[in-house]
Length: 211
Image (cartoon, rainbow, N blue to C red; front, side, top):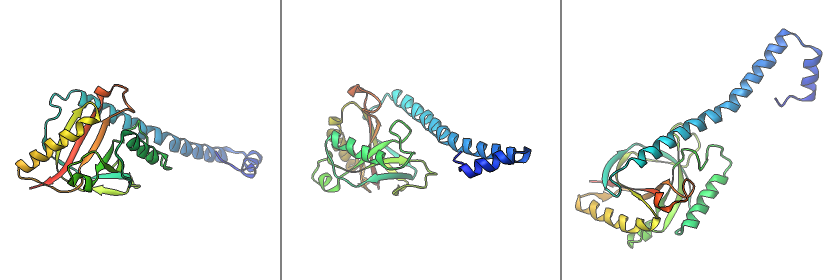
């Protein structure tokens, strides 16, 4: 309980029912503080299990949809990258921060933004600002992605599918009369941290749009 030697000595020399109750109440408080992170982690894992089970049921992979998505808080690092190993390294750097809430295995979906200059050239494989989504009640975060409409697409398999699928989405956005309204992103719903089978990877592309 992190009591000093003097505090322990004082308790031992003056034990009575009131001091014992006080000591036990302090111990209960300490136990509550130990339990809460585990309770939160359990809830996170339960959410993640539900999300993965829902993705398993998808029967329209690679279908483009327009969805309204609520505002989201994220923690990110600014670093351009392109290869899978570089993206993974960026996530490792995020994990290394002194923040007990960042667990790869918990319900913290990871993602990257597509670099703007590369996107203008039609290259959607250069990334920047790797990030984690964090809970709405989280006080530590870098920025908030505003609520809005997004062109979304979920695909299964290796990341080499991203480039042609981004191109397909850009054609759809133009055809439907939308314009890009922010930074496109890839969100890794299930990746190497959750499966060794490449064909089981699940990635979601989200592109903010407006009419």
